[in-house]
Length: 110
Image 1 (spheres, helix red, strand yellow):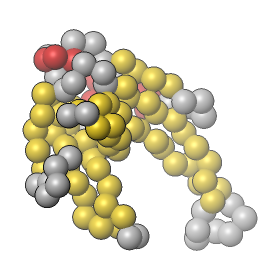
Image 2: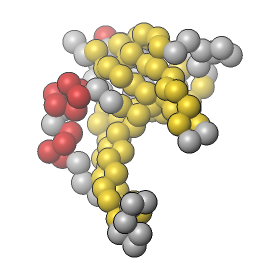
Image 3: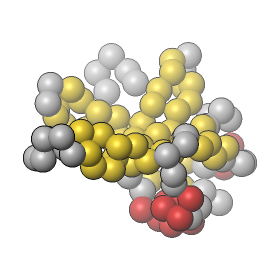
Image 4: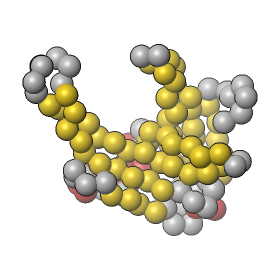
């Protein structure tokens, strides 16, 4: 999020948070010809003039909003109300398969 980002930061959420979630069938590398479920949980927003997407790994957030009960093969969106009072713990993950991934580790809600 900066030219030399730190590995973790805490920001006040901008007012345009969009959390989307979906269950997808993807090829199973261990069993050729088979598929396995992949659970997409992404938070997207604009911050400091740039668009960002973070994978959400916060189990408390998932529980609070009953995401695991609601997830299906159609993309669903959850608009987070009162975004001005929400804080996000964001992290740039270690390199994995040649890429660094952005992770939202915790969503602090009122």
